[in-house]
Structure formats: structure tokens, C-alpha cells
Length: 568
View 1 (tube, rainbow, N blue to C red):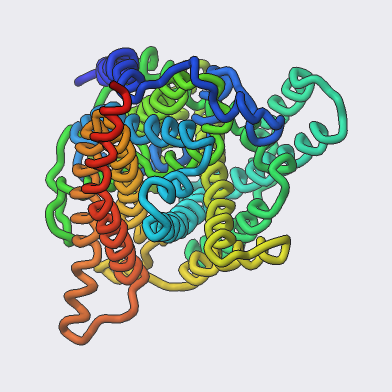
View 2 (cartoon, rainbow, N blue to C red):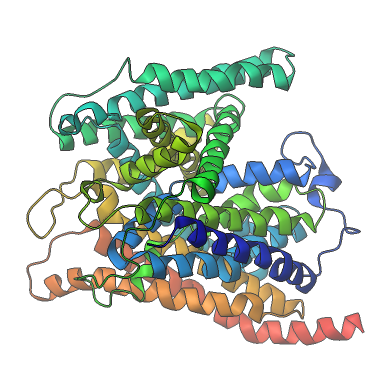
């Protein structure tokens, strides 16, 4: 059998080579220059624009983008296609597509005063294209909230059939205690002058105490799994509502700080477990799945593994907060490009938790949260951590990653609605948040079934469309950056080729996703389907946006020629 050691060393080596070679070349191709002041240095208001050392900013950026996507996607795709195709896509996609997307979104935002990518595209492509882009962002965020809220609910439900390994209710308790600790930490930071090392020394051990006490005070809803899941879904959406309205200092910032320690702990456990755990690869490298949606491997593999290889959500983070903290232009390679490669490594670790399982293992019937947590528990066994404690820690880490995304997604959805409809003040914020969460709340109470008539979890139903919409958002960002590069007289194909590939993959995936629903409509037997209707809407908005991009192409050729003349 092949050892996980070798399947881990090769991706790590390729990521390092990509960072030093391709990342350095990207910096030169974009003309990054430390002599040119960044928005963080020019404004430096101590609140939003704050020059930050690259090592610290990388950690903050990585914690914001490394959600559950690079964990669930590889496990789902690996179980369907085998681990080898997914591993190739993760490594090559992160280096040549995802890393380019994150880096370019960060770089172009810095060049435009730290504005978010939507505002930048308004300057580059015009108001109509910007409105279409904002609308697409909002629709994509809806998918994010639905999928990630339901995945969290799945991690919390009580499964008595697991016996002593029924950890879900205890993880729910630990999760609530973790959020409570974050609020207390925010109050301590706001109202005291305690040094950071003191608060860290108090609150980080408190997280691990919360993990320990959670299993002794489990919280569970009564009823069957579906009823429990709906209850947890509603409660998590309430959390999204509150979190999107609370001040940043009270919840999001301290939660992000504490969550970073969980993130880094799981990252370290995964890396050391891969290198020194002595685990063997048992799962098949390739599988031939049966797909009802059409071609199996292409394009659906590339949208099933979304965040671990390329994610449009990263561009929102890079241009929304990270660009306002970049101290030097060249730090974009470390933070933007390097952050994506680290997320690729997270995806490799997630795939490894599947690779350890033998065909026919009962664990394969569990959700990605359970597979990841149990795999991480095996890795933590290297340090002598008991298996049960490792699983609890892994499931809390899984939920923590989701909280990171839910917080940001709900807040960004609120921002988009406020900007689109001119909503102002506290009342406007509440209305914008309710409008954003209304669709996910409706989806919670809808009942969906698979081909055999069994209830289908929301996250599993929405995952293909989530991956396609998330990566289509990345493709749209890359097309906008391509126009900017061409206008500047630079190598536009750096982002143009990845944009073309991702447009082909994502649009064809969405077509395959909506095709079954359209077929039922043609026979007069179709019903209202949230995936089909939203998928068609996503396609329409994306095509309208691309039309605006194409209409700007000829104008940019003239600008490019003028730019070359002026540089001479």
C-alpha cells in the first residue's frame, strides 16, 4: 500500500515551488512596487486601514478564507471519483487558478484605494456590470449560507445509533461556549487594558476546556434527525442574523482570533499526522461513478472541489478587508497567493482523511464532518490524544470553520442589499439582513428527497450549485481583472486563460444541474425547484455581465495602446 507520507510530500513540494517561482513571476507581471504607497499606509485611520506585518496579515486572511469548503469538497469528490483526480485539481488549480484569482483581486484592490472588488469593477467596467456583479455576489452568498448552515446542523444532531461515538450534541455545547468566550473576550479587549498575551493565555486554554466540558453537558433537540436538523438550521440562521448586526469588536474579531488557534492546531495536526502518522492509503485512487446529471468527471469534479482549488469568496475577503491592511504591495504574494496555497494544503489534508478509509468502511456512510473529524483524530493520535477527544476537537474545528464563513457571508449579504436598495441606519441593516436570510429560512422548511425517496439533506442538494456559483464568481472576477490588465498594457492572459477555463467549467456545470428540472418542465410535470430556478438566474446574470465585459474589450485595446505610448 502507498503511504500517506508520499502523497503529502509531493503536494507540499509543488506548493512551495509554485509560491517561489510562479508567485514571484506574478508579482513582476503585475508591476508590484514597494515604493508605491498602499492604501493602508496612505490612510492609516487605525480602524479599517491599518498597515499590518505580512506574517500577521497572512494568518488573519487565511483564517477568513479557510472555511469548510476545502474540507467538505475534497471528501465529497474523493468519495465519488477517487482521490487522485481531486488531488491533481487541488494542487494545479490552487497554483495556476485559485492563487492567481486571490492574488489579482488583492492587487487590483490595492491599486484602487482598497476598494472592494465590486467597486473596482464599477470603475473598470461601468455601473451596469458592477450591479450585475453585486447581484451575482448576493445569490452566491445565499448558497453559502444555506449549505454551511446545514452542514453545521448536521454536525450537531444526535445520532444514538453511533453509541459512545454520538458526539454531535456535545459538540453543539462546545460550540456555544466557544462563541460565548469570543463575546467575553471582545468585552475584555474593549473595556480593559490587559496585554494581548494575558488574554491569550486565559482564553485559548478556555477553548479546550469548552471542548472537554461539552461532552458532559450535551444539548440535543428531540425528534428524528430531520426534525433536529431543521431546529438547528433555524437556530444557526438566528445566529447569522445577530452576528451580522453586532459590532465587529464584540464577536467577529475575537471569534476570528480564537478560531485561528483552532485552525492552526488542526492544520498542524494534519501536517504532522500526514508526515509521521504512518497511515496507509486504502481508498481507491479512481472510481467510475454513476451520475444522473451528465458527464461525471468533467465538469462536475471541478465544481465539487471548489474552495480548495479556486473560490470566488476569497476575492471578496481579499478586496474587502485584507487590501486595507497590506503594508507593502509585494506582500500580496505572501498573503494573497500564499494564503490560497495554504488552503490547498487544507484540502489535501481533508482528502487524506478519506484516503485512509478502506472500501466498504462504515465511516464512508457518514457525512464529511464525521469523516474529517475521525481522520483528524487518527492524526492527533500521533501526539497521544485519545480518539474520542480527537473526534470532538475535529468536529468543533469543522463548525468553527463554518462560523467564519457564515459570519462574513451574512454581513456581506447585508452590505450588498444596503448598497443596492439604499438602505440606511440600524433599521436598514435589519431589513437588509432579513432579506438575505429569508431564502435560506424558506429552504430549511422545504422537503427534498433523493431518487429512492429518502429525505435529502439541504447541504447535499445545494452543494453542486454552491460550488458552481462560487467558482463562477471567481471567473467573473478574473474577467474583470483581465480587462484591467489589458487596459494597463500588461499580460492579460495571466488571468484571461484561468477565466476562460473557469467560465467553461462553471457554466457547463450549471447547465447540467438545471437540465433535469428543465426536462421535467418540458413534459409538464415540473414543480418549482430552488436549484433549477436559481441556477438559471445565475446563468442569466453571468451572461449579461460577460456581455458588458465583451463590450469593453475593444475600448480597452485603445487604452492599452495609449498606455504603451505614455510609458515610452
